[in-house]
Length: 583
Image (cartoon, rainbow, N blue to C red; front, side, top):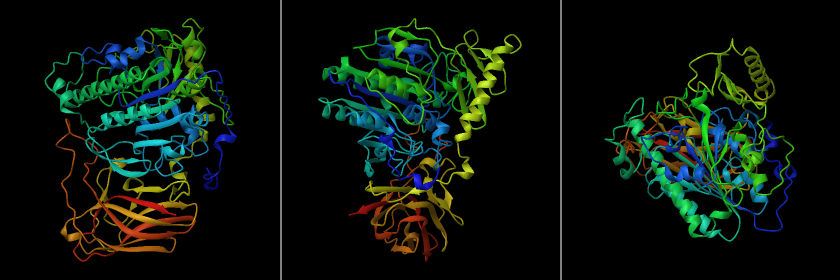
C-alpha cells in the first residue's frame, strides 16, 4: 500500500448507513477470548471446569456449532473488525508491524460510531499501535488496554487509556471488565457498542489465587497433559466466565438485557494440548482444533432461547450479521467476504449453503465445507464422522477433495495475492499524526544496532537490553505526516553504571540531547505470579522520564535513539518512547 494513502479520508465515503427511526437500536457487547479453545467451556463437554455464564449465552440465545476463526490472534481480530479475509488488509504477522490493518479498511466500530453509537474497546487490540492504526482511529471513542499481541504482567500492569500511559488496577481482565461496566453505565441512555477483547488464557499463565486454588491440586479427568500450564489455563477461563457474568448482571440491573446483543467467541485454538472435544490441532494449526471456535449470540428481543445454528460460519460473518441484526444498512466499496447469518438465527431450518471456508496461516491452508475438511497436505476428512481427522477419505470422495482443492487455489490466487510479503511491507510507523495527541514507539517496533539485544525473541512485550557502547542505537522506520513540536517521554531502567550516559533522539536533522541522570534498577516482574514457566520476556516497572521537546519535520525518516557518551559501560534498558504533540 502506498504511503500517500495513509492519510486519505476514506471511511465514510465508502459507507452508507441507515438508522432505525422507530426505536432505539439494540446495544452490542462482544467478548473475544485469547487462546481459549473450543473445548475450554463446560457446554462443549469439559467436565474439568465450569463456565455457566458463557454457557447461558447459548442456552438463552443461539449457539453456532460450526464457526471458524483464524489459527492465531491478529488475523481473527482483523476479520471480525472488517468482515474481510485478513490478507486483504495486509495482516501477515502478529508483531513488529505485520499485525496492522491497512488504514483504508472500514471497521465494524466505524459503522456503529457513524450510526450514533457510543463505542469502546477494553483489552488487547493487536491490530496496530500508532495512529491511524490505533483503536481510537478505527471507530472506538474509548480505548483502555494495550495494543500489542501479548503482555508481560497481568497484575497492576502498565496500560494505556486513549494513548496516555496509565497503570492498571488489579488483575487485567477484571480491570478491563470494570472499565466496560463503567462505560455501559455512563451510556445506558444511548446505544453503545462495547468490545471486550480479553488477553487470557494467553501466556504468561497468571491468574488470581482464587481461581488457581481451584485447580492447583484438582484431579483433571480429561486433560492430555494435566500440568500447571493446563491448570492455569482452565483457571483463567473460569475467571473469564466470572467477568462475563458480571457484565450480564450489570445489563440485568440496568434493564438493558432484553435489548442488548451479547456475543462470545475465541480467536483461535487452545495454546496447549488441552482437552478439545477430540478435535485435531491447537493454536497455529489449520486443522479443525486450531480454527474451530464457539460462537454464542444472545439477543432476547429477537433470538429464541436454545437456537442452534449448524450452518458453516466464519469470523468475517460477524460484521454483516450485526449490522443487519441492529437494523443498519452497510455498503462498502470494498466487498465483504462475510455473509449475514440472520436467516439461520431466525429459523434453524434455513437451508444450508454450498459455502467453503478456507483457513490460512503462513504457508498453510485448509478448506472446510459443511461436512468435510481438506487439510494442508491435501488429505480429505469427514469431520462430521471423524472430528479428530484420523481416517482419510480422499479416495472415497474424490470430487469433494477436488472441489475443496480448487477453493484453496482460488484463495491463493484472489486473496493471498492482495497480501504484501513481509519483505515488501513498506508501511512506516506513523509518528505525530495530527489527529492523535500521543504516539507510542515501543521496543517491539524498533531495530537495534551493535550489541543491543531484545529481552525475548517474542517481541510484543519485550524491551532492549545490553546497551553498552557509544554509537549503538535503537531506530524506527517512521513517517511524520505534519510538522510539529513534541514532548518526549522515555520509559527505561538502568543501574548506577548508566548514570551519566548521554543520548540523542534524532530524526531528519532534528535532535534532542539528554542525560540519564537517575538510576532505576528494579527487579524483573512476572516469575512470582507465573503458575507455569513462560517463553515471553519478563518485564520491569520502567521509570518515566521526560527528556525534553523536539521539533519533527513532515516526511519519511528514520528516528533514532543514539548513545553519544557511555562513561561507565552501560546506557539503559529501553521499553518505550512516547511523543506528545504540543499545540
